[in-house]
Figure (tube, each protein chain N blue to C red):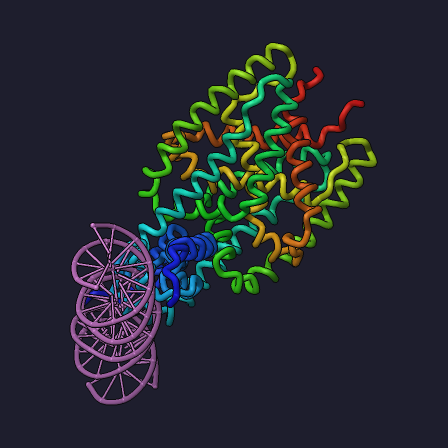
Length: 209
Length: 209
DNA sequence: TAATTTGTTAACAGTTTTGTTAATAAAAGA
DNA sequence: TCTTTTATTAACAAAACTGTTAACAAATTA
């Protein structure tokens, strides 16, 4: 009677993503994932042999999304450096705003199981190398035009990522401390984005000596 | 024959701290803690009835350290605001540098078990309220002297914490991406501290319009 | 030194969680 | 339609952990 709908696999994946993002690998329970997906937990082992394998799937996806998010950022080369940088900050911020749990997820998993380095290492490092080289080139050019202060590309990238990502990571603690509900407070995030842009812009503006 | 040395309790606590900081509550194993402490795991239940209770001890301690660390920061009121702010950044950075795993530990636990909010809430919120009020007062004064640009105390505090804390949180990922070993690289952290101070100083300097 | 409290071990009990299997139903292919 | 492959369930096995207990040793105290 009931049609065999292979979207069960998708349903399981969705439930697993929720569970893993929320609780991390160690906190996640395969039974709980199955329950939330509305299937018996044997199904989960049928589609994905082990918890580990199911996790890998999710982990890969999220690396993809994060890397993609940062990738898009540095493509246009027409406009002046500061302008491009402001746009990059904006885009980067919005990507995280739409996937606010990804960064903590990634950091937490890499921290508690460094073995997973291997997976992530290739994906990121090849990409990050390119990005940094490109950025450094553009920076040097802008510096020689006296358009901006000197800064190292790695330093600038870490400035950017720290400012854009950290607020989302610390959100639960921040909410506990202040009693605010930041989900219901889009103004807070708009202000935050502007502040981050402001900080980097001022950092890049040549000092008047 | 063997003397009853009650430093076993301390040994267990030390091993537990290691384990919890490294793997988080869910990833920690009481058997592993006992093994690392060199005692049978029954001992662990003898001194600390449950895993949860053992965790509470550690959790409280770390909240204490973190809050203390930020507390010390804003006491002197003689010097100009920017100067004080630079010192605060320096002290704050060094506190974290010496306890680099505490922030991720706290964030991770609060994220995966919001129930623990209750504990942390009182400690932080009462304190944070004071700090923010003090900061805002000092900021307003410095602004009216045209000593600095206008900024919200909450915003400035989040700037500061983001810049100082995030690099330590993202360290494992960063190392995976770049292949560097940041533990062996004290220069990296010195540069980072300077960059953070630079960023905030420029943010606070009144813009010349 | 006798009694009591404190520390320690080993073995075990209970639970939770992951993973397997055998039986069966549905779908697809021939 | 008969066979084979895929999907699904329920029941079960195995492992991993946490927590308990009973027996005993060492230290403390009276």
